[in-house]
Amino acid sequence: MTDTARARKLADRIQVVVAETLQRRIKDPRLGYVTITEARVTGDLREATVFYTVYGDEAEREASAAALESAKGVLRSEVGKQTGVRFTPSLTFIADALPENAKNIDELLDKARVSDAAVRTAAAGATFAGEADPYKVPAAERDDEDE
Image (cartoon, rainbow, N blue to C red; front, side, top):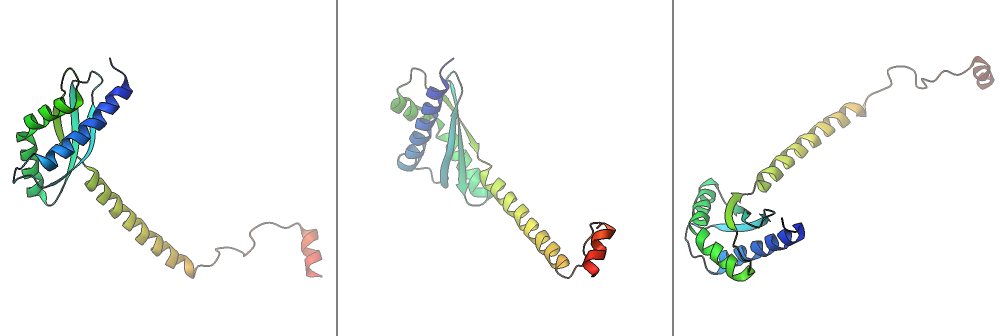
């Protein structure tokens, strides 16, 4: 087993190498506006998972996924050249769910804002259900206040 710090450093380097190679060397027309968000390497440094996002609709995402799969060999050889590790890790590309999660969170926050506004408007004209001062006051103190 290797050091987790070494795995993290290798993952960071793989992220940079893959992003630069996609930008400079891969000329696949199916490849849309792809952003490499993260890379993770297993503890034995044999497998690397690269997370990416694609700006666009579902068809562009599918086309970019196919382009990444077809360019996997070129990307892996470039990672091997630039990292200098004994065994070049195999690459797996996974579409990052970050944009969908952010959109879901934004929708939930909007619902919460609407609910808070409804509670605020309902509370604006509300009065107490009982007396204004619900705490019991001893009789001796009440008599002193009346005088």
